[in-house]
Image (cartoon, rainbow, N blue to C red; front, side, top):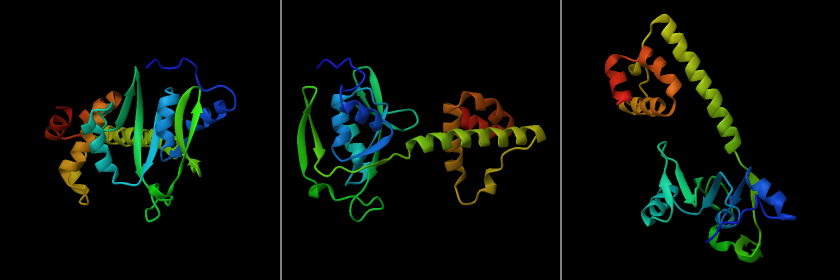
Length: 201
């Protein structure tokens, strides 16, 4: 199926398209966005099921879902890759939304394509932009701490963190090594030789 070339739906739906980039959309609406507006960079899909189980089923189905090197779920449509975050919600969950089976659906046709939305849709502000901003400042903190250790010739002591197993911590540092090339010289300077061999292989 040919993908539409417009940047977003015309008329009154353009504002909804722009808002969708910064909001969490509930139930079937996110799926509809993939079909109609394939310019989204990421979506958060709220489901009434175990997210890990649902994620595994999506990957097994071979329906366009895959994992990034950072273990994030993404959906491929054409040449675009859309990051997908699965969140669990329901009347008894931390995210208190109506149970999925109680939501009736309304079928609409927009730009010649069908879409389903809840008759009582729930839209809330996404925390994703804040998480992205926090991740950036956290990375700055990590870099500053490693610089401080390197200046004093101090090595990271993983035994000083008894709440987490050393292998778990080293696996996290390995992921950091793989994802952030600029941090590798600092890790080389602040890790014991055996630890650096582990994270760099």
